[in-house]
Image (tube, rainbow over all chains, first blue to last red):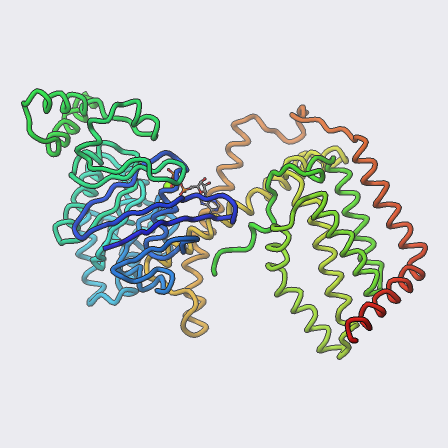
Length: 271
Length: 261
Ligand SMILES: Nc1ncnc2c1ncn2[C@@H]1O[C@H](COP(=O)(O)OP(=O)(O)OP(=O)(O)O)[C@@H](O)[C@H]1O
Ligand SMILES: [Mg+2]
């Protein structure tokens, strides 16, 4: 479990970017962190593997205080995939990019494992290309492939759907589901309501560094669009019809249906 | 630990008298202090210059916190200068002088750079007859430093998150470790500069074309006062330097004797 207890953080000593944030991320759970640009989401997740240390309060990862534990030890448990994947690439080829990280975390047979991961993520044909020459979506999928290779316990994704559609979006979904099915926890920072509504999970909304909403994805769909809009979130159009169908008793829960509706909406968009 | 101390040298908007002065006045005064610092070969006079600069930065600039960060960042360099001089000359007092000079030079530059928006500085240079391409290159690179500092932090964080260890192993391992930082840094900065060039072109920027500045500047009463006070101090120090030094030394020795008792 990751416990964030009354976390305050300031970059410059004057202005607090995070103010008294508390969360608890349990085993096998999916946790969404939502909020407007600049609300402090990325700053918050940089605390989860000890890259940033709390100005006040504390962060415990499986009982380890991030202030007293080296980042290398925490990074093995908490894997963070950052917003801009380019900043992590440095090897000449895609395959080496994967295997070097497996080696860092002491995975057995890293080369063979890297080949498997490449296949799993459908990246085999880019095996010997430089990561920098991939498209935006391919880079993002590669960064997820790299950061899940050693089966970390917690997977943290910062805006994972940006620049992903169609096939790559499905691969992201697959990666999330597989991680959950192995008992891992997933933390997702996003603006993408379609992604949020696809799975049952816990939600916090940050605004100006403070938690302004706490709940479950089920409840989020019933919030009115104006309130969501204030937090920089847009309710997908099909969410309203699902909401209506639920109140009129046609369906019992949203999840699953949202996926179906999203797919239908996608098809209609492409017609 | 790996965070870079560049923040301490960066301009931040603030409401203080020094920020409202004309950049040309500030630049001139910074130059006057730098020349004084270079010319003065007495520890006592250097101390006086430090005091004047401190007064300027603290009272007119309200820069206390920033100045502390700034000096902490520079402390290793100043220690190095001091030690190097001491090892060569073996004279404690003589090694103090170069260290003081470094400190005063940095603080002189601070009176300008910490309180002047890079854009205003570019306009200042242009008013002083520099070609636009140079002033533009200047203000762009000043901005670029901060962008790169941010990118660098993000790269280091991404590599640490991948289980990359930066400061371990022998020399060759360390060099290898640092390629993980340098390669993305170089690629990203080249890309960024190309996109800046393209943006300029799309916005219709051409070398040698006439353009109208967005803001205008005017020397006002306080600018003149700031310059006159500084010039008077500088002249006094240049003409009566010897006498002032004697008085200062006397005060200092008396103070030190009091302390000793
Ligand atoms: N390295 C830094 N130094 C100083 N301030 C920073 C730094 N990184 C972020 N900030 C500031 O902290 C605040 C929160 O930023 P953060 O990146 O955490 O927001 P975010 O919620 O992730 O936004 P976005 O949706 O745009 O990614 C912003 O005001 C930002 O300017
Ligand atoms: Mg962010």
